Image: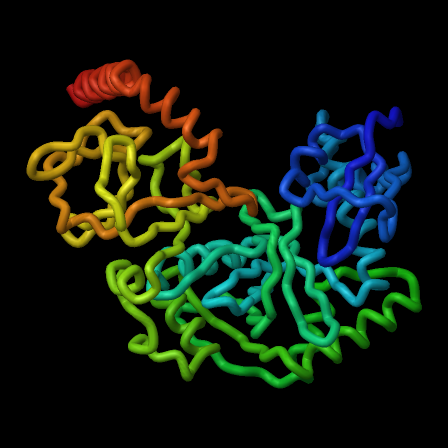
Amino acid sequence: MTIQSNLKIRLADQNIEIVTDSGYLQKQCLSYVSEFDEPDFTVNITEEDLEFERQKHIERNGTDTPGREAVYESLAAYRKIAERMIDCDTLLFHGSAICADGQGYMFCAESGTGKSTHTRLWREHLTNHEIFMVNDDKPLIQIKDEVRVFGTPWSGKHHLETNTDVPLKAVCFLERGETNHIEEISADEALPQLIRYSYHSEIPERVKHSIGLLIEMMRTVSFYRLQCNMDPEAAEVSFYGMNPQAKETDRPKTFEEIIEKDGYLVYTCKGYSMMPLLRQHRDLVIISKIEKPLKKNDVVLFKRNGKYILHRIIKVKKDGYDTAGDHNWWFEKDVKRNEIIGILTSIVRDGKEIKEDDPKYKTYVRLWCGAWPLRMGILHANAAVRKAAHKLIRR
Protein backbone atom coordinates (compact mmCIF):
# COMPACT_ATOMS: atom_id res chain seq x y z
CA MET A 1 0.00 0.00 0.00
CA THR A 2 1.38 3.40 -0.97
CA ILE A 3 1.02 5.94 1.81
CA GLN A 4 0.07 9.40 0.57
CA SER A 5 -0.97 11.01 3.84
CA ASN A 6 -2.02 10.05 7.33
CA LEU A 7 -5.55 10.76 8.50
CA LYS A 8 -5.82 12.41 11.92
CA ILE A 9 -9.19 12.22 13.66
CA ARG A 10 -10.56 12.62 17.18
CA LEU A 11 -13.11 10.11 18.46
CA ALA A 12 -14.44 9.84 22.03
CA ASP A 13 -11.65 12.06 23.45
CA GLN A 14 -8.90 10.08 21.68
CA ASN A 15 -6.50 11.43 19.07
CA ILE A 16 -6.19 8.73 16.40
CA GLU A 17 -3.92 8.54 13.40
CA ILE A 18 -4.89 6.24 10.53
CA VAL A 19 -2.22 5.33 8.01
CA THR A 20 -4.16 5.39 4.73
CA ASP A 21 -4.14 6.46 1.10
CA SER A 22 -7.93 6.12 0.81
CA GLY A 23 -9.84 9.16 -0.40
CA TYR A 24 -13.02 7.31 0.61
CA LEU A 25 -11.91 7.11 4.25
CA GLN A 26 -10.66 10.69 4.21
CA LYS A 27 -14.07 11.89 3.05
CA GLN A 28 -15.97 9.63 5.45
CA CYS A 29 -14.07 10.99 8.46
CA LEU A 30 -14.09 14.63 7.35
CA SER A 31 -16.22 15.86 10.27
CA TYR A 32 -13.83 14.24 12.76
CA VAL A 33 -10.52 15.51 11.38
CA SER A 34 -8.35 17.04 14.09
CA GLU A 35 -4.90 18.57 14.47
CA PHE A 36 -2.52 17.19 17.09
CA ASP A 37 1.19 16.50 17.49
CA GLU A 38 1.15 13.00 18.93
CA PRO A 39 -1.69 10.47 18.54
CA ASP A 40 -3.01 8.44 21.44
CA PHE A 41 -2.74 5.48 19.09
CA THR A 42 -2.12 4.75 15.41
CA VAL A 43 -4.08 2.39 13.16
CA ASN A 44 -2.27 0.58 10.35
CA ILE A 45 -4.35 -1.31 7.79
CA THR A 46 -2.64 -4.42 6.39
CA GLU A 47 -3.44 -6.64 3.44
CA GLU A 48 -4.51 -9.29 5.95
CA ASP A 49 -7.05 -6.82 7.39
CA LEU A 50 -8.49 -6.13 3.93
CA GLU A 51 -8.71 -9.83 3.13
CA PHE A 52 -10.51 -10.44 6.45
CA GLU A 53 -13.15 -7.83 5.55
CA ARG A 54 -13.45 -9.27 2.05
CA GLN A 55 -14.10 -12.76 3.41
CA LYS A 56 -16.73 -11.45 5.84
CA HIS A 57 -18.46 -9.73 2.92
CA ILE A 58 -18.42 -12.99 0.92
CA GLU A 59 -19.86 -14.91 3.89
CA ARG A 60 -22.76 -12.43 4.14
CA ASN A 61 -23.45 -12.04 0.42
CA GLY A 62 -22.23 -15.25 -1.16
CA THR A 63 -19.81 -13.48 -3.50
CA ASP A 64 -17.24 -10.71 -3.63
CA THR A 65 -18.21 -7.32 -5.03
CA PRO A 66 -15.63 -5.62 -7.26
CA GLY A 67 -14.57 -2.11 -6.35
CA ARG A 68 -15.14 -2.41 -2.60
CA GLU A 69 -11.47 -2.11 -1.58
CA ALA A 70 -12.01 1.36 -0.08
CA VAL A 71 -15.03 0.10 1.87
CA TYR A 72 -13.01 -2.84 3.18
CA GLU A 73 -10.35 -0.41 4.39
CA SER A 74 -12.97 1.71 6.15
CA LEU A 75 -14.40 -1.37 7.88
CA ALA A 76 -10.94 -2.53 8.89
CA ALA A 77 -10.19 0.91 10.34
CA TYR A 78 -13.34 1.00 12.47
CA ARG A 79 -12.73 -2.55 13.68
CA LYS A 80 -9.17 -1.73 14.77
CA ILE A 81 -10.32 1.50 16.42
CA ALA A 82 -13.05 -0.38 18.30
CA GLU A 83 -10.43 -2.83 19.54
CA ARG A 84 -8.15 -0.11 20.87
CA MET A 85 -11.01 1.91 22.34
CA ILE A 86 -11.63 -0.83 24.91
CA ASP A 87 -8.35 0.20 26.56
CA CYS A 88 -9.80 3.74 26.76
CA ASP A 89 -12.93 2.59 28.66
CA THR A 90 -15.00 3.00 25.52
CA LEU A 91 -17.10 0.42 23.68
CA LEU A 92 -18.44 0.46 20.14
CA PHE A 93 -22.09 -0.63 19.80
CA HIS A 94 -24.34 -1.67 16.95
CA GLY A 95 -27.27 0.64 17.58
CA SER A 96 -29.04 3.84 16.66
CA ALA A 97 -28.28 6.66 19.12
CA ILE A 98 -30.36 9.81 19.31
CA CYS A 99 -30.37 12.88 21.56
CA ALA A 100 -33.58 14.34 22.97
CA ASP A 101 -33.49 17.42 25.20
CA GLY A 102 -29.79 16.93 25.91
CA GLN A 103 -30.05 13.23 26.88
CA GLY A 104 -28.89 10.25 24.81
CA TYR A 105 -30.97 7.17 23.99
CA MET A 106 -29.66 4.12 22.14
CA PHE A 107 -31.87 1.61 20.34
CA CYS A 108 -30.39 -1.85 19.72
CA ALA A 109 -31.85 -4.60 17.52
CA GLU A 110 -30.99 -6.95 14.71
CA SER A 111 -30.40 -5.32 11.32
CA GLY A 112 -33.68 -4.74 9.51
CA THR A 113 -35.81 -4.65 12.67
CA GLY A 114 -36.44 -0.92 12.44
CA LYS A 115 -33.96 1.00 14.61
CA SER A 116 -33.45 3.72 12.01
CA THR A 117 -37.16 3.91 11.29
CA HIS A 118 -37.94 4.32 14.98
CA THR A 119 -35.43 7.13 15.55
CA ARG A 120 -36.79 8.80 12.41
CA LEU A 121 -40.24 8.74 14.04
CA TRP A 122 -38.71 10.52 17.04
CA ARG A 123 -37.31 13.25 14.81
CA GLU A 124 -40.50 13.67 12.80
CA HIS A 125 -43.18 13.44 15.48
CA LEU A 126 -41.69 14.54 18.81
CA THR A 127 -41.53 18.12 17.56
CA ASN A 128 -42.05 19.57 21.03
CA HIS A 129 -38.58 18.31 21.98
CA GLU A 130 -35.12 19.20 20.72
CA ILE A 131 -33.97 16.06 18.89
CA PHE A 132 -31.04 15.15 16.65
CA MET A 133 -29.14 12.01 15.64
CA VAL A 134 -25.86 11.14 17.35
CA ASN A 135 -25.13 8.06 15.23
CA ASP A 136 -27.44 5.75 13.31
CA ASP A 137 -25.36 2.58 13.32
CA LYS A 138 -22.09 2.46 15.31
CA PRO A 139 -21.92 4.91 18.23
CA LEU A 140 -19.18 4.80 20.84
CA ILE A 141 -20.13 4.57 24.52
CA GLN A 142 -17.56 5.97 26.96
CA ILE A 143 -17.90 4.53 30.47
CA LYS A 144 -16.03 6.62 33.01
CA ASP A 145 -17.33 8.90 35.76
CA GLU A 146 -20.29 9.45 33.44
CA VAL A 147 -21.61 7.27 30.63
CA ARG A 148 -21.61 9.26 27.38
CA VAL A 149 -22.48 8.39 23.79
CA PHE A 150 -20.32 9.73 20.95
CA GLY A 151 -20.86 10.03 17.22
CA THR A 152 -18.57 8.22 14.77
CA PRO A 153 -18.07 8.37 10.98
CA TRP A 154 -19.53 4.87 10.62
CA SER A 155 -23.23 5.67 10.60
CA GLY A 156 -25.00 3.20 8.32
CA LYS A 157 -26.57 3.56 4.90
CA HIS A 158 -28.41 6.77 5.81
CA HIS A 159 -25.19 8.49 7.00
CA LEU A 160 -26.90 10.07 10.00
CA GLU A 161 -24.37 11.19 12.59
CA THR A 162 -23.16 14.23 14.47
CA ASN A 163 -19.68 14.87 15.81
CA THR A 164 -20.84 15.37 19.38
CA ASP A 165 -21.30 13.58 22.70
CA VAL A 166 -24.15 13.57 25.20
CA PRO A 167 -24.87 11.71 28.46
CA LEU A 168 -26.51 8.34 27.84
CA LYS A 169 -29.77 8.05 29.75
CA ALA A 170 -31.24 4.78 28.46
CA VAL A 171 -30.73 1.79 26.18
CA CYS A 172 -33.80 0.27 24.56
CA PHE A 173 -33.88 -3.17 22.93
CA LEU A 174 -36.34 -3.00 20.09
CA GLU A 175 -38.61 -5.78 18.82
CA ARG A 176 -41.29 -5.76 16.13
CA GLY A 177 -44.84 -5.96 17.46
CA GLU A 178 -48.44 -5.46 16.38
CA THR A 179 -48.97 -2.88 19.11
CA ASN A 180 -46.67 -0.47 20.93
CA HIS A 181 -45.55 -1.42 24.41
CA ILE A 182 -42.48 -0.56 26.49
CA GLU A 183 -41.27 -1.94 29.80
CA GLU A 184 -38.20 -1.41 31.94
CA ILE A 185 -36.00 -4.47 32.34
CA SER A 186 -33.45 -5.43 34.98
CA ALA A 187 -29.68 -5.23 34.62
CA ASP A 188 -29.54 -9.04 34.61
CA GLU A 189 -31.87 -9.12 31.59
CA ALA A 190 -29.96 -6.31 29.88
CA LEU A 191 -26.42 -7.69 30.22
CA PRO A 192 -26.70 -10.50 27.61
CA GLN A 193 -28.18 -8.02 25.15
CA LEU A 194 -25.42 -5.49 25.82
CA ILE A 195 -22.82 -8.15 25.18
CA ARG A 196 -24.61 -9.11 21.98
CA TYR A 197 -24.65 -5.60 20.53
CA SER A 198 -21.23 -4.39 21.67
CA TYR A 199 -17.94 -4.96 19.87
CA HIS A 200 -16.37 -8.37 20.58
CA SER A 201 -12.64 -8.56 21.16
CA GLU A 202 -10.83 -11.89 20.97
CA ILE A 203 -8.12 -10.83 23.41
CA PRO A 204 -8.94 -12.28 26.87
CA GLU A 205 -7.81 -9.21 28.81
CA ARG A 206 -10.00 -6.95 26.68
CA VAL A 207 -12.96 -9.33 26.90
CA LYS A 208 -12.71 -9.18 30.68
CA HIS A 209 -12.37 -5.39 30.64
CA SER A 210 -15.37 -5.05 28.29
CA ILE A 211 -17.59 -7.07 30.64
CA GLY A 212 -16.43 -4.90 33.53
CA LEU A 213 -17.32 -1.76 31.57
CA LEU A 214 -20.79 -3.11 30.77
CA ILE A 215 -21.40 -3.90 34.43
CA GLU A 216 -20.27 -0.39 35.37
CA MET A 217 -22.54 1.03 32.67
CA MET A 218 -25.54 -0.71 34.24
CA ARG A 219 -25.11 1.29 37.46
CA THR A 220 -26.31 4.54 35.90
CA VAL A 221 -28.11 3.71 32.64
CA SER A 222 -31.71 2.47 32.47
CA PHE A 223 -32.74 -0.39 30.18
CA TYR A 224 -36.01 -1.05 28.35
CA ARG A 225 -37.65 -3.52 25.99
CA LEU A 226 -39.85 -1.99 23.31
CA GLN A 227 -42.32 -3.86 21.13
CA CYS A 228 -43.45 -1.53 18.39
CA ASN A 229 -44.89 -1.10 14.94
CA MET A 230 -44.04 1.67 12.49
CA ASP A 231 -46.86 4.02 13.52
CA PRO A 232 -45.98 7.49 14.84
CA GLU A 233 -47.52 6.48 18.16
CA ALA A 234 -44.47 4.24 18.71
CA ALA A 235 -42.28 7.32 19.18
CA GLU A 236 -44.50 8.71 21.94
CA VAL A 237 -44.81 5.32 23.65
CA SER A 238 -41.04 4.85 23.78
CA PHE A 239 -40.11 8.44 24.69
CA TYR A 240 -42.67 8.89 27.44
CA GLY A 241 -42.16 5.30 28.59
CA MET A 242 -38.51 6.13 29.25
CA ASN A 243 -39.46 9.56 30.60
CA PRO A 244 -42.59 9.04 32.70
CA GLN A 245 -42.02 12.39 34.40
CA ALA A 246 -42.02 14.25 31.07
CA LYS A 247 -45.58 15.28 30.48
CA GLU A 248 -46.50 16.84 27.17
CA THR A 249 -47.36 20.00 29.06
CA ASP A 250 -43.81 20.27 30.44
CA ARG A 251 -42.57 21.79 27.17
CA PRO A 252 -44.11 23.97 24.45
CA LYS A 253 -46.04 21.91 21.93
CA THR A 254 -45.71 24.06 18.82
CA PHE A 255 -42.80 25.66 16.98
CA GLU A 256 -44.35 29.04 17.73
CA GLU A 257 -44.39 28.38 21.48
CA ILE A 258 -40.82 27.07 21.47
CA ILE A 259 -39.50 30.19 19.70
CA GLU A 260 -41.54 32.44 21.97
CA LYS A 261 -40.19 30.71 25.08
CA ASP A 262 -36.55 30.07 24.10
CA GLY A 263 -35.98 32.63 21.35
CA TYR A 264 -34.94 29.91 18.88
CA LEU A 265 -35.89 26.49 17.56
CA VAL A 266 -33.67 23.56 16.48
CA TYR A 267 -35.04 20.73 14.36
CA THR A 268 -34.10 18.34 11.55
CA CYS A 269 -35.34 19.41 8.16
CA LYS A 270 -37.92 17.30 6.33
CA GLY A 271 -38.65 17.36 2.61
CA TYR A 272 -36.67 18.22 -0.49
CA SER A 273 -37.88 21.74 -1.28
CA MET A 274 -34.76 23.44 0.14
CA MET A 275 -32.18 21.24 -1.58
CA PRO A 276 -29.26 21.56 -2.13
CA LEU A 277 -29.02 23.84 0.91
CA LEU A 278 -30.73 21.37 3.25
CA ARG A 279 -30.64 17.57 3.22
CA GLN A 280 -33.74 15.79 4.49
CA HIS A 281 -33.39 14.07 7.91
CA ARG A 282 -29.67 14.99 8.06
CA ASP A 283 -29.13 18.72 8.50
CA LEU A 284 -30.19 20.67 11.56
CA VAL A 285 -31.74 24.10 11.12
CA ILE A 286 -31.75 26.84 13.73
CA ILE A 287 -34.72 29.18 13.46
CA SER A 288 -34.59 32.36 15.52
CA LYS A 289 -37.09 34.97 16.59
CA ILE A 290 -37.37 37.75 14.03
CA GLU A 291 -35.69 40.91 15.30
CA LYS A 292 -35.12 42.82 12.05
CA PRO A 293 -37.07 43.64 8.89
CA LEU A 294 -37.31 40.70 6.50
CA LYS A 295 -35.68 41.06 3.09
CA LYS A 296 -35.30 39.19 -0.18
CA ASN A 297 -33.37 35.88 0.11
CA ASP A 298 -34.10 35.46 3.84
CA VAL A 299 -35.22 31.90 4.63
CA VAL A 300 -38.32 31.98 6.83
CA LEU A 301 -40.45 29.45 8.66
CA PHE A 302 -44.19 30.05 8.32
CA LYS A 303 -47.39 28.12 8.88
CA ARG A 304 -50.23 27.70 6.41
CA ASN A 305 -53.22 25.41 6.67
CA GLY A 306 -51.68 23.80 9.75
CA LYS A 307 -48.45 22.95 7.89
CA TYR A 308 -44.97 24.33 8.66
CA ILE A 309 -43.07 25.51 5.59
CA LEU A 310 -39.44 26.64 5.34
CA HIS A 311 -38.91 28.65 2.15
CA ARG A 312 -36.87 31.57 0.85
CA ILE A 313 -38.32 35.04 0.31
CA ILE A 314 -38.29 35.71 -3.45
CA LYS A 315 -40.17 39.00 -3.43
CA VAL A 316 -41.02 41.55 -0.74
CA LYS A 317 -44.46 43.06 -1.34
CA LYS A 318 -46.38 45.82 0.32
CA ASP A 319 -48.69 43.48 2.22
CA GLY A 320 -46.66 40.25 2.35
CA TYR A 321 -44.04 38.09 0.72
CA ASP A 322 -43.74 35.62 -2.14
CA THR A 323 -41.61 32.60 -1.19
CA ALA A 324 -40.25 29.48 -2.85
CA GLY A 325 -38.09 26.50 -1.95
CA ASP A 326 -34.60 26.50 -3.45
CA HIS A 327 -35.57 23.29 -5.29
CA ASN A 328 -39.11 24.34 -6.30
CA TRP A 329 -40.47 26.07 -9.37
CA TRP A 330 -43.73 27.20 -7.76
CA PHE A 331 -44.41 30.01 -5.28
CA GLU A 332 -46.09 30.28 -1.92
CA LYS A 333 -47.63 33.66 -2.69
CA ASP A 334 -48.76 36.45 -0.37
CA VAL A 335 -47.36 35.05 2.86
CA LYS A 336 -48.46 37.46 5.58
CA ARG A 337 -46.10 38.73 8.24
CA ASN A 338 -48.28 37.25 10.99
CA GLU A 339 -47.93 33.81 9.36
CA ILE A 340 -44.13 33.91 9.66
CA ILE A 341 -42.78 32.28 12.83
CA GLY A 342 -39.03 32.78 12.56
CA ILE A 343 -35.98 33.21 10.35
CA LEU A 344 -33.20 30.74 9.51
CA THR A 345 -30.00 31.94 11.21
CA SER A 346 -27.74 28.90 10.87
CA ILE A 347 -27.45 25.31 9.65
CA VAL A 348 -25.61 22.42 11.29
CA ARG A 349 -24.21 20.09 8.64
CA ASP A 350 -21.94 17.16 9.50
CA GLY A 351 -21.32 18.62 12.95
CA LYS A 352 -20.31 22.07 11.67
CA GLU A 353 -22.41 25.21 12.07
CA ILE A 354 -22.89 27.44 9.02
CA LYS A 355 -24.27 30.86 9.92
CA GLU A 356 -26.21 33.18 7.63
CA ASP A 357 -23.25 35.60 7.52
CA ASP A 358 -20.79 32.86 6.53
CA PRO A 359 -19.00 33.79 3.26
CA LYS A 360 -19.72 30.35 1.78
CA TYR A 361 -23.42 30.71 2.49
CA LYS A 362 -23.45 34.19 0.96
CA THR A 363 -21.75 32.81 -2.14
CA TYR A 364 -24.38 30.05 -2.36
CA VAL A 365 -27.19 32.61 -2.14
CA ARG A 366 -25.58 34.82 -4.76
CA LEU A 367 -24.97 32.01 -7.27
CA TRP A 368 -27.89 29.64 -6.66
CA CYS A 369 -30.56 32.23 -6.00
CA GLY A 370 -29.18 34.56 -8.66
CA ALA A 371 -29.82 31.83 -11.22
CA TRP A 372 -33.36 31.34 -9.92
CA PRO A 373 -35.21 32.49 -13.09
CA LEU A 374 -33.21 30.07 -15.26
CA ARG A 375 -33.60 27.19 -12.80
CA MET A 376 -37.30 27.81 -12.45
CA GLY A 377 -37.71 27.73 -16.22
CA ILE A 378 -35.91 24.39 -16.46
CA LEU A 379 -37.84 22.85 -13.56
CA HIS A 380 -41.14 24.15 -14.95
CA ALA A 381 -40.36 22.70 -18.37
CA ASN A 382 -39.41 19.34 -16.83
CA ALA A 383 -42.67 19.27 -14.90
CA ALA A 384 -44.63 20.05 -18.07
CA VAL A 385 -42.89 17.24 -19.95
CA ARG A 386 -43.61 14.74 -17.16
CA LYS A 387 -47.25 15.82 -17.06
CA ALA A 388 -47.63 15.41 -20.83
CA ALA A 389 -45.94 12.01 -20.74
CA HIS A 390 -48.24 10.91 -17.93
CA LYS A 391 -51.30 11.89 -19.98
CA LEU A 392 -50.06 9.90 -22.97
CA ILE A 393 -49.48 6.83 -20.82
CA ARG A 394 -53.00 7.03 -19.38
CA ARG A 395 -54.62 7.16 -22.82
